Image (cartoon, rainbow, N blue to C red):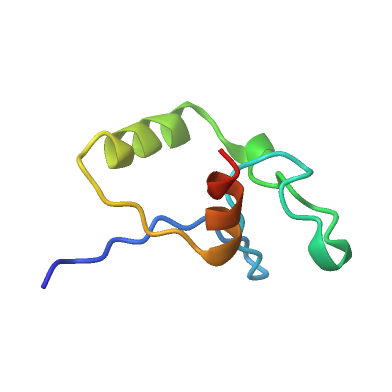
Length: 71
């Protein structure tokens, strides 16, 4: 069995969302899309680069899959 490593962006109040734009998920009146972007800095970029530069499989949630399936 392989190890599952989760890279999740979660705010202190439990909002989990990818670092996309404000229009990323507006379901149920959510108006704070893209909340992560203002907090990203050079260190954040280095950490993400190190994480995603290794070979990996991508496990998507349903909504993210739907976004990717459109392409």
